[in-house]
Length: 368
Ligand SMILES: [Zn+2]
Image (tube, rainbow, N blue to C red):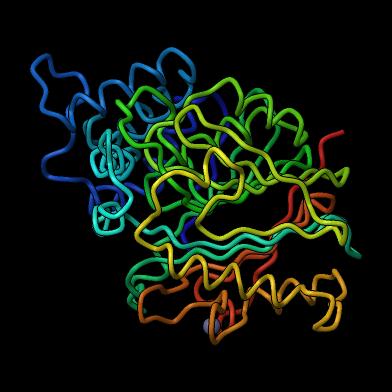
């Protein structure tokens, strides 16, 4: 796993990341990036341009940090912007207005990694707990695993210190924890068709959440005030005080779910609140439904009520077989496992399939 240690202003943090991981950024830089600033733009450039304008207006620290990244790695801004938004531009193109349900399953076979599972317990011996896996449509080759994920350890000049797990070059990725005791994990979710790109490119929303929120309530307030562009997200939100919610967000649609009466909450890649569950299905719907059914069976009291503990969390995210959360094909492959305890400001990372790779502990000092 790569690590980027940064501090200071948004631009300065970007510059430090770019300098530290320059060779990895240059290897992934596209030969022909999206051109969000061009006057005569094709469809992808136009969507990227609306994303950039929305960020400049609502989250200007993100393009600032991308400019720093470009400077630090000696790459054009467009290359860094492309690494951050291209997969979300593709989602907008794959889900045009008027998309019929039957067509959508095939429409986004090209889409990026998506299948991820999140499980949360409100109360364990370590306080609230998040367990998460990340899945892709192809296995990560053994020789590529160690430079697939970046652990960003960020000390902003304003706001709490935080950890964020992301692909190389992406400012926001799949899960994080801040020193105020707020944690977030995401899964790709159903998509509002007919978007034009005006919004925060999906996964980038994790970064303002970690930079500015100390509680689940603050995170829900922030999600209410932002439009999102690209894929939908299921977001698991936890805080040190034990507030836990699952937020469902795509474009302007927003729904929130609460834990069940055992203090358990989970999701895969489909939605459950009425407005979002009615959206067209994703290409990974069947896999998502199998994992959901597996989690329902796993936590069904009639199958023996599992204690809500760290051991149970590690066990459930390494389950195999029908609907198992740790996936080894044929359609999905797990490349990352996480357990996060926000009250302890602790995160355990398995850099690979969590059944076969040890978890490594990382901790933040709590803010006062
Ligand atoms: Zn496994």
